[in-house]
Image 1 (cartoon, rainbow, N blue to C red):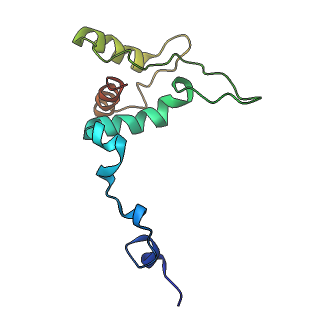
Image 2: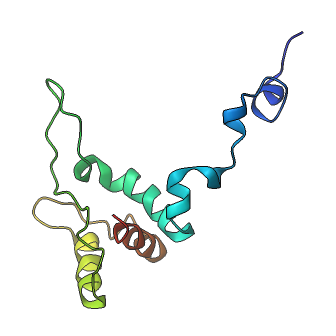
Image 3: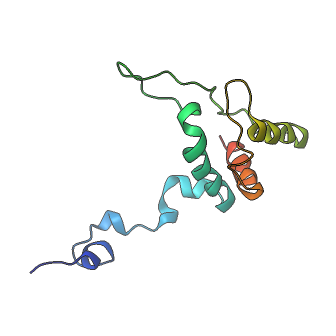
Length: 116
């Protein structure tokens, strides 16, 4: 008997039990709300190249930007305003994202940065 795509990926008899877990059972989903999860996606897409540590292997480039872990956990509204401006305008070693992020995306990103 040959199984089709839908049988394998959408609940057919060939699915593994571990693959049937709902998304909310994943550890990261339990910790982040919807806005923070959207911000995490933006962070991974736009910021992680420079701001996430790499497992340095021979020939891999070093991390360019600083680690953001814990930097914005207890940030005040004034500090968040400065952060917004820096993300939008950039700096000497960081590009600005004023043309690449919608206002809602910026708020999502900041919500995620506060969870690091």
